[in-house]
Amino acid sequence: MASPLSVALIGAGNVAWHLGRALEQAGNHVVLVYSRTLVKAEFLSETLLHAHPTQNPDFSLVAADVFIIALKDDVVVEFLKKAVFPRSSLVVHTSGSLPLTIFEQHAAIRGGVFYPVQTFSRAVAMDLKQTPIGIEASTPDDVSLLKNLAFSISEKVFDLPSDARKVIHLAAVFACNFTNHLLGISHDLLTQQQLNFTVLQPLVTETIQKAFAHAPFQVQTGPAVRFDQKIIEQHQQLLQDKPDYAEVYALLTEHIQKKAQEIAKLDQ
Amino acid sequence: MASPLSVALIGAGNVAWHLGRALEQAGNHVVLVYSRTLVKAEFLSETLLHAHPTQNPDFSLVAADVFIIALKDDVVVEFLKKAVFPRSSLVVHTSGSLPLTIFEQHAAIRGGVFYPVQTFSRAVAMDLKQTPIGIEASTPDDVSLLKNLAFSISEKVFDLPSDARKVIHLAAVFACNFTNHLLGISHDLLTQQQLNFTVLQPLVTETIQKAFAHAPFQVQTGPAVRFDQKIIEQHQQLLQDKPDYAEVYALLTEHIQKKAQEIAKLDQ
Image (cartoon, helix red, strand yellow):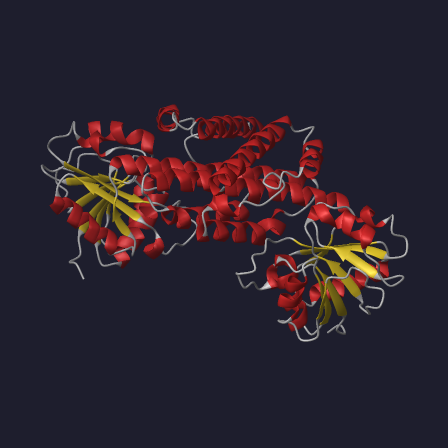
C-alpha cells in the first residue's frame, strides 16, 4: 500500500464530507477543513481525527501533500484569486466542468484534478470503492501522487484529460440531470392521481440495468419505438392540460422514432 | 396459503417466460402454452412441468382457472376475435395500456387484468417478489381469485382500475422509455470519444435512488437548475454538430429552469 498522505480540504459541503471520511478511513491525514462559514468547517472537522477548522483562505503555514478544493464549480476561480498556498503546493479541484488550465494563472502552485464521478448527499453513507475517480495533473509525479491517493479510496481510478472530462460531464447531464427531470414528470403525473411513485421503482431500476448491460438505443422499448400511434395519441390526450409535459413527450417520441429508423437503415 | 390454480399461458415471449416460471415455482399448474409459432410454445412448455404446447387458438377443451394473455399490446384485440374459450372462462391480459373494456364484446368470458409493472428480458433471471402487480376484474370473486394468484408470486399486489393503469403506463413512458433514450444519447457521446459508458453507472444508480427517496423535482441538480449559463453554453458548443441532441438539451434545460422558478415561487 502507498504511504498515507496529508490532505487539506477546501470546502465543507457534500463532496468534502464524503472525501474527508473516506480519505481518513484509508489511513490518510486530513489536516485542515476550510469553509467561508467557520461553523461548517468546525462541524466537519469534528468528525475527523486531525483536522483543524478555519475560515481563513491564507494557507501559507499549512503543511499538506494535497489541497483538495471541493467548492461549487462557479466559485472555484474566484477562490483561487484570494487563496494563499505554500509555494509549490499541489492544489486540485474536484469539478467535472472546470479545465486544468484554471491553475495557469497561479504559477506558484502545481494544479491538478481529482474528479469523483458521483453525486453526493451528506445524509447517505456511501462506499466510494466503486466510484470512478478521474485524475489529471501537469507532471507525471503529480499524476502518480494523485492516483495513489485516489486508489486509497476507490478501485476505479483513471487518467482523465480536461476535454474528455467535459464530455463525461455533458453525458452525465443527459443521463442524470435530465433523467431526474423525467422522473419528476412521472412522479407528478402519478401523485396527481393519488398513485404512489414507488410503484415504478422496480421497472426503472431494471431499465437502468438493461441500458448499462447493452447499448441503450438497442434495447429501446415503449410505444414510440413500436410506432404505436394509438397509444401515443392516448397519451397525448392524457397530457392535454399539461402542455410542458406534452412538449417533452412529443420531442422525445419523435427522436426515439428517428433513431429507430437510423438503426434500421444501418441494419439493412 | 391459497390453493394452487391452473393457468393457461397465451404467448411465449418475455412476459410469458417469467410469469410461467414464477407461477409454477409458487405451486400453480401451467397447463398450456399457446404461441402462433409452435416451436416457441414448445420451447417454453419444455421448461414447465405440466404444460402442453399449442398453436391452435381454440381452447374450448382446455380446463384452466385463468387464461393469461401475454401477447404484444397491439395484437390482443385481434387475438380475442379468433380465440375460442370454454364458456365463462376467466381471461386476463397483462398490458399497461389496454382497458378492461376490450373484453366487453366477448360476453361468454369473464375479463380481467393482471398487469406486472416491470420490463422483462428472457435472459435475465428475475425475482418477481418485488414487482408490483395491478389487478382488475368485473366481479369481486374474480378480483379475489386474481389477487390470490398474484400474491403467490409477488408481495406487491394492488387494485388498479383501467384509468389509473393508463396513468401508470404514461408515467412509465417518461421514467423508463424516455430515460432510456437519454441514456442512449449519453452512451453515444461517450463512446464517440472512446470513453466507457459504465463510468456513469454509479452516478446514474445514485441519481435514481435519490429521486425515489425524495420528490425528484426537489432534488434536481446540474447546470440548468443552477442557471449556470457558462456551462450551458459550453455544452451547447460541444453539441453543435449534433442538432438532435442539442434540441433535447435546450428543451429539457428550459423546462428544468421553468420548474425551478415555479418551485421557488411556491416556497415564497
